[in-house]
View 1: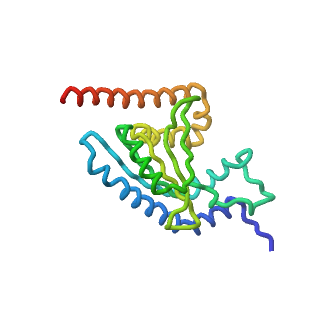
View 2: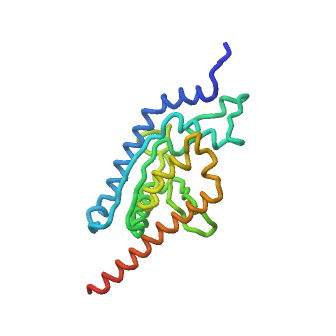
View 3: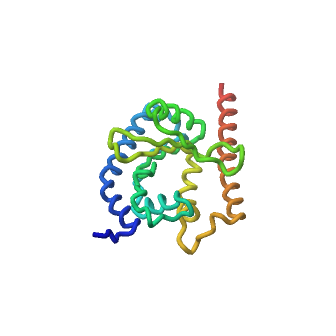
Length: 215
C-alpha cells in the first residue's frame, strides 16, 4: 500500500512521538544548569543577574527549521525517508542570560566542564572579526538518547532583544517576509548589538572606577 503522507505529515507524526523526550530533556537541562550556577547566583551583587529559561521547540517550528537546512530550503519528495527531526540540535533548549557580561565567562566555564563532550556552535557576530553574540553547545544528556539538547549563554540585553527580534525578523509573519534580509534592517540590527554592548562596557568601566574609588 502506497503511503500518501507528505514529508511534513511524517515529520509531524515523528514530533509527537518525540515530544515526551523533548520535554524531559528541557526539564533536565534547566534543573542541571540552575544547579551548576547556583553558587555563583548566591554571590551576585544586587545589580547582577543570571536567569535560566528553558523552551521546547513547537511542531511547526521544528518542521520549518529542518526544511530551512535543506538545499533550496525544500524537501526532496522522492526521498521522504531521508528526513528526521532527530537531526535537529535544538528541539529542547536552555538559555542563560547574564548581566553584566563579565559574568558570562564564569557561566561558560561551568557549563563546559559539565558538558565537555557537547559540540560548541557559537552564534557569530554581525560582522567579520566581531565577537560571538552567544555561546552555544549541543549534545545528548541522561534524559534521552533520542533528542539532543542545546544550551545558550548570552548577555542579558542581547537575549532580551532577541525576544522581540525573533518573532519580528528571524521568524516573521508572512507580511514581514524579507525584512530580515533588507540591507537597512541588517544595518540597524547591527547597530543595536553595538549599542547594547557599549552600554555594558561603559557600565562595567564606571563600576570598576567606583570600586577603585571606594578603597
